[in-house]
Length: 161
Image 1: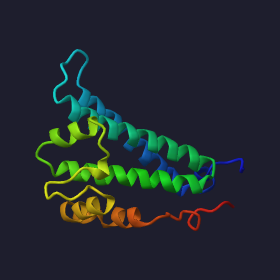
Image 2: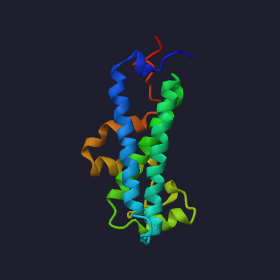
Image 3: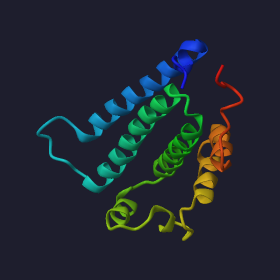
């Protein structure tokens, strides 16, 4: 392994790294808003836990991404990016629902996300979630393309010196 992490060799990565840390901090703040102040009764418990689960996953993925990137482990960073894109697609789908109650209860009963049907009776597969993202978020093309890729090649951009 190299003695220095990529952001010390490629200073342009410092800003990107700080942006990721800010995203992680914002996710923590959003989670705290959902949970509410200490002693506050929790309403819509299933819905809140589904959202908290996605937020927690996002926080952990950002932390993991920074760790593997600092170790020059670009092969492991690609699946982490893919998992984060899964989060975005699911949140995009949830944002279009009037009520998260039904899907939350299904998830809590142990049903797999990809086997749950949407309002049109189609399973919520990755492909279906990408369709929703195209409809709901016209600016989502970049993460949809990345999500469709089996591998995300970072090596050509910032390779070991």
